[in-house]
Structures are given as structure tokens and as C-alpha cells.
Length: 178
Image 1: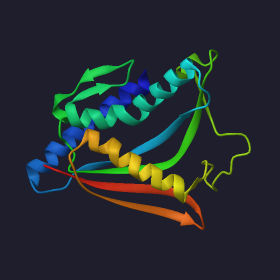
Image 2: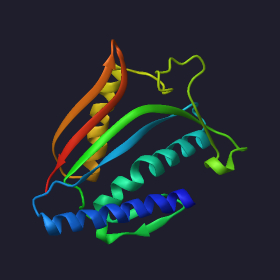
Image 3: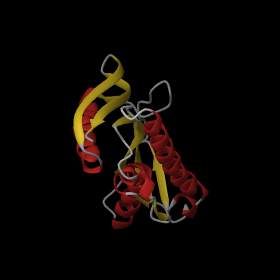
Image 4: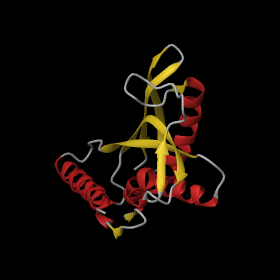
């Protein structure tokens, strides 16, 4: 729960900074680079599907949507943060890896989920599951859709650091409408 409170406080801190910056410099571009992580269900079980969606909602959606509508919803912690509404002039999306997720009754501290990489996965030198350029393109198209639901999107630019066909990390920057 402490981690969720910290995340909600980050939303509040971002909102306070956004308003302070715009008070001093009204035309300033203020935004957030969001660390987005992919979660894929490891099997077709209903409980696995539930905990996979839960991880996605808390990790990827709770912060982004709070900046859109002022509703912080991290399932176990729900807060109204009206000062956060519309506090993004641009959005960045950083993607480093994704996890397989499986329901695990013994992992109550982790919302009953075990996150892991498939056995024998090719890991990057930083320890993340490597993604191919094909996966990166699917991510780019999917993330634009995700972010468009939470902001008014004007334009998007993707950058990626690659070595041959492997992508080390990906950053996507989006200019929001005002």
C-alpha cells in the first residue's frame, strides 16, 4: 500500500509542479515520461487473466488516467486528485521490457501474481527481455492507442536504441492538445 500512496503522491507532485511552472511561464511545455511495462498472461486461466489486467491497470494506467480525469485508481487505493486534471502538455512513454504473468496463490504480497520471463529468454545486457523491431512496432501502434485514451494527442515521435535487430529500449514522445 505504501507504494500506491507514493504513486498517488507523485501525481500530486506533478500537478503542483505543472501549475507552478505555468504560473511563472504560461507557454511552458510540461509533461511526464511514463514507464510503461507490458504484461502478458502466461496461460488462459481466468485468475491469470485477472491478475494480468490488475498489474496493467495499476502499473500502466493509474498515473496516466489521473492526469486526464483526476481519478487515481490503483484498485486498492482510489483517490480524487482534481488538481491533476489536464496537467500534461506532452507525454513520453518509455518501454524496456514485458513480463509474463501467472496467478500464484502463494504470492499475496504481489497481488497473487508471479511475473517472469520465459525460460531461455534472450535478455539484453541490462537484464530485460529483448524485444525485436516487429514487437517494437506493435508497441508503438498500441501505445499511441493507449495514450490517446488518456490525453488529446497532437503528434507522436518514437525513438529507439537498437543493436542489429534487437531493441534495447524505446521512447515515444507525444504532444498533447490544449
